[in-house]
Image (tube, rainbow, N blue to C red; front, side, top):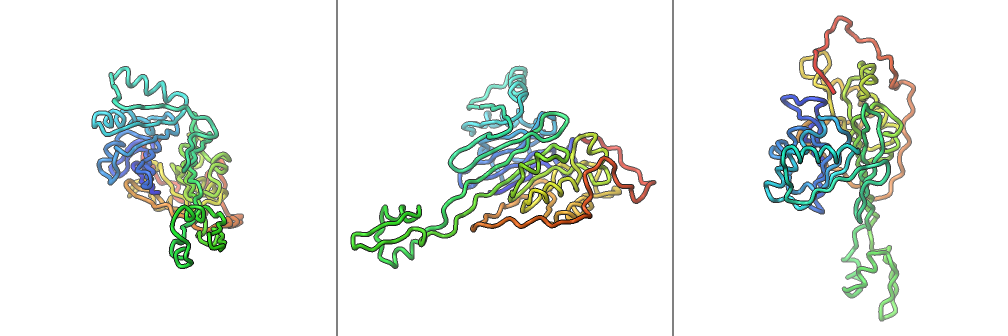
Length: 347
C-alpha cells in the first residue's frame, strides 16, 4: 500500500507544487485509488511512475475547484487512450450534476463505464479486502473525510513445519491455514493455529481535507496508521483559518494526537509559505512536530509506503500535556509585528 502525493498546494498551483491529488496504489490488485483531482493531475501522472490506466476509483472530498478541476480532463484522456475499463467516482451530491454538465457542454463521450456515487456519512464502499467510510468535516461547503480500512488477514502458513511433521500436501493445508484442527489417517491430530503466524492487521489510512479543527476528524482518524490532514496555515494564522474554515499545523497535530494515529502527513499548504518568506514550510513542520513528533510534510511526487503491523498492538495512550496550543479564535502575537505577509490568494 503506497501513497503518492500528486499535488500538495492549497488553492492555486506553484512552480513546485500542484493542487490537491493523492494516489493510493494497491499493488496486490493492480489498482490506484485517487483522492481529489485538482487541475493538472493527469500531467502529474505523466511525470510520476504511476499508470493512469490503473485508476479504478476516485474519491472527491468537496466541490471546490482546486480539488475537482482536473477530473474531466483525466476521465476524457483515459477514454481516448482506450486503456480504462471502468471507473467508480464517489463524492458530494453536486458531483454527478457537475460531471453531467461537463460532458454535455464539451460533448465528451466516455468509451468505458463511469459510475458516480453520491456519498453520505457512513459506508461508502466495501469488498472482501477493503472498507471505505466517510464523514462530514467542517468547511465552507459540504466536505467529506475518507477512511480506508484494509481487512485483517491470516498470518503466513508455515509449510516447512507441516512437511517436517509428515503432513501430506493437499486440502488439509488450506484447513490448517484457516486455523482448523485436522486428524490424519494415522490418527495424529494437529491444530492449525500452531502452523500460522501472527495475524496481519489491516492498515488504516485517513484523508481529511478541507476542514477546520473538528471532532468528526478525530473520530474518523482513530488508530489510523496514516492520517493525511490539511495544514493550510501556520499557527499564528489561526484567526484566518477559522474564518476560511481551514486548518493550521497545530490543529492537524492535535487531531493526530487525540486520535492516536501512527503517522501524520500534512498537505494542502498555502503558497504564502514559499522559501524566503517570513515563515517557510520548515517552520510549519516544526510547529506540528512540537505537538505530534511523528509528523511528515508531503511534497509533490513523494511516495510513502504504509507499514504493516504483523501482530496485535495495544494503542499507546496519548501523552498528556498542558502546553498544547488550542485551536482558538485568537491567534498568538507575531514575533515581528512589522513583518509583512505576501499577498497571495489562498483557498
